[in-house]
Image 1 (tube, rainbow, N blue to C red):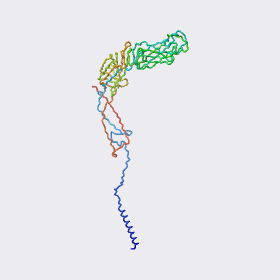
Image 2 (image 1 turned 45 degrees about the vertical axis):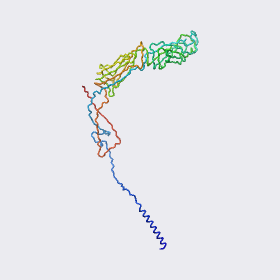
Image 3 (image 1 turned 60 degrees about the vertical axis):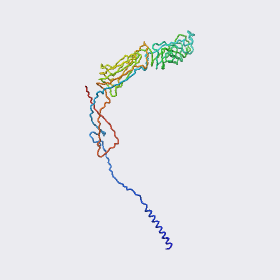
Image 4 (image 1 turned 90 degrees about the horizontal axis):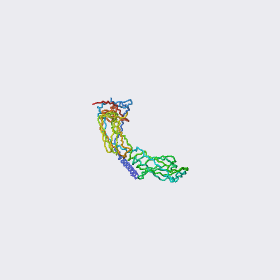
Length: 442
């Protein structure tokens, strides 16, 4: 074989060998196993159906009204119910301290004071009887005691009004300023001070009022005047050293917390209520059984008269219940009233829910005797109504239970559907009832 042919054969052999290797390599690459898959086609029929409420419900007791609203109507007989002793209230109890709290002084305390010219004008003695012009001058403090006021010894004042009235009978003007200060002469404590910041001309009058501070007022009071005078204001005046400036001091609207004084007969009142029941409103009722009892203790230092009125309670004779007790200091009195055949009656066109009580406490004080009274002194009362049962009654009863039978009703849906989903719904109840009251007299 010639070399050229040998080389050609060798080349063809190598080319064939490479193709065989490549084919073998491609043949060894196998696919991975895959699960089988299906794409079934299912046809579902569409339903377009509307139901009315009446079609959804097939029941003799269930129906619809004109608006299509579902309604259920049924009648039930409720077992017989007896009022029995439900027309009652109590027992109830209430305590009350009938205290004065604020002692309103029933009398005025006042007194006139007089300051002569020679007490406030230094040259009055020297110029007495002369006619001349009085120059302005300062009025130095000058004092004078009140005439002893016999109606009281002392008062602890919580509030009140001090009134000072000036009647200028001098030939000169008073002010500016002109001051009147009141003090307790025993300890020099200040009761009050009134200042006049305008001229009080000769022959003129002026008045000022101030609120009193909390203080102790005794019956030994001193007045101190001071200030200035404009003199005769350039006019010739005849000097009379005995001419006077009169001052009226008055204490009014005094409220005290404690006092030792002679005062007229004193009384105070209380209006009170007692809640009877949360289930009974009475227009009129006759009591079959029950009692009202109360006790009163007098903690005052004087004899007291206590009057209790129950304006909604009437005795068998038709008169309003009123009771008056006379109680000496430190004494306790007790009352018990059987209320059989008493009537509880409301005010006109009303109904009683709370019993009204009117108290009047009268202290046996008089203008001739000195007494001590404190605002915390009281008549201590304790009241109790036993169970009150009425034999007859006109009014209203609340919270009396009536049994209503439980009722269950199923909706009978059409066979075409197995469930209903409501897009929106509401439920209302309307009760119509008829109650017949039967009176049984045993």
